[in-house]
Image (tube, rainbow, N blue to C red; front, top):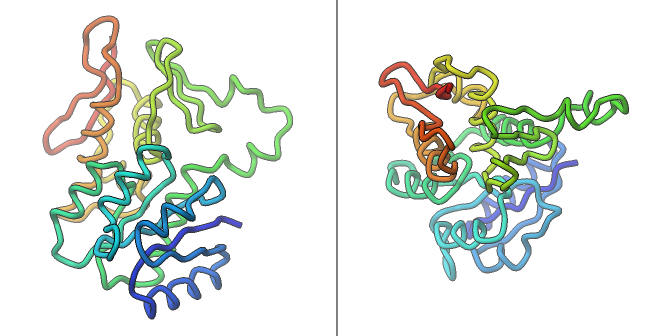
Length: 234
């Protein structure tokens, strides 16, 4: 059972969401402000649902502090129209955002999409014959270990969020091929791309900043305006 830390100062909404998530099969712990969330957050939590507007410590500041010590997936809950909060949240390492008010089914679907990409598949968990090498993907010195959600280059670990790792993994599987923003959004974030949704672009921007310089001097990623992204081959 996946454990979620739900952080929101709206007590009535929090009680309702917690009940919905528990009925769906999640274990839920609640915090009503950012500081309380930081005090409660530990390695048992697999996802944080984090409201932006809160007393004591708001969602943006809380996210900053979370990212100093943890890559736990974070979904921001934002008021409709707060575009600057959404962009800033993504820049700081949030995995996704959901504007209020939202549909309970969409929330659950988005949570499941995030958890699917950070958890090894059931077949991988149950297979004793699967070696660690089969879980690894290598490209030009870049090594991705899907089971551990870890990336490294020339032996040096690269600290990536779940969304950043998933994006890089999709591109490494198809080097030199264009992968559309729509495909990345559906496969990585679990949602279709809306006209003004910048989530994928922000995650790609963060990924670019974290990837080390290649030995050959080439960029890792290339943007093809209106078409998508590709991993640059040597």
